[in-house]
Figure 1 (cartoon, rainbow, N blue to C red):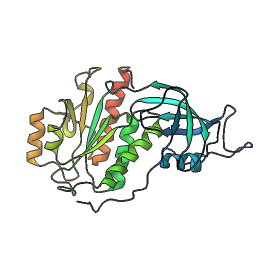
Figure 2 (cartoon, rainbow, N blue to C red):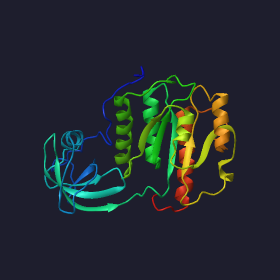
Figure 3 (cartoon, rainbow, N blue to C red):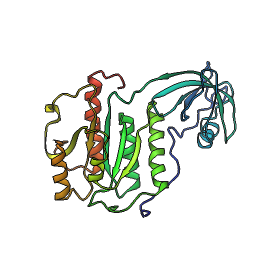
Length: 283
């Protein structure tokens, strides 16, 4: 079933600004680096010296917005924690090619693993914003769920909408300099979300009646965290009972009422800051 709130489906970009034209044109530095040139190329990658071909969407971005040239060195990421540098060898809108100069693992899924459960919001722009900011903060997976009081209760997102959410995450990955892209999936209900988890994580939920975040027990370096925020209409009594049985920890996020997407990013920022203070490897 297609939601009426599908919105714009154009793919976002990590940086839509064209390179500034300098005296030499193209905005390149003296070493042939193209500013803002970060591209997504899914695995598998060839060995060093092999060729990577960007897909049509990335190739159009490279040729039109970034305006790369043969010989430019660019950054490439695979969305699974691997990053590398490549030298552009040929340019076409449907297939920019580059030679892989080096590759390295930067982010591992085991470290700093926090995920976000976000209700399917009425506004496409607001949910896109939440996905973007959660990605920038280091979120590892995004579960978009349909709560009972969501306007989308009982609906399923179209393939186009799911791809839009994933494209937003990819663009934010590149914009923020990450090499790991959060996995984005839809869950039909809160109960389906919790029962479908591979393992039981430590769960935190933003709640006006919750405790002080600073007083939470310390995080463990190998701990998986799931952050949950409620829907625009609030949770039903049955959903609250489900959360209580799951053993969630309630955290107060401030003195005032927050929108769902604001609560998600407020809680995500607190968690990301604490993990960074632990000097975790992937932060």
